[in-house]
Image 1 (cartoon, rainbow, N blue to C red):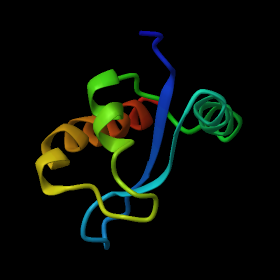
Image 2: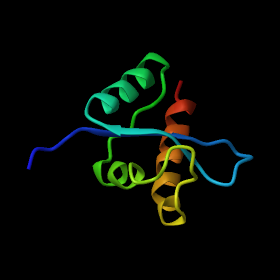
Image 3: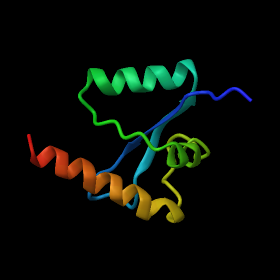
Image 4: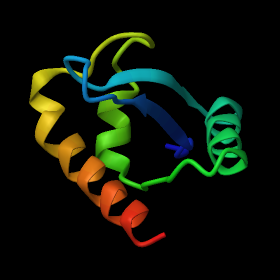
Length: 85
């Protein structure tokens, strides 16, 4: 089976219930998501297992509760990166 690149983008603000999936896709769409993130200095975290799960969430929907902990770790990591700038 050929592996296809996947990507998902999330939006999180303190006043919303949970992070929202703002984009997801495979192949060319995944490339475009990553390209846009790079163009806009949005941090990119590579986590295949989490990406696979996030790509099953409809765009515009909150992430499911069972992904809160994994996504919280990523948000904390990105926050730490931002504090180093």
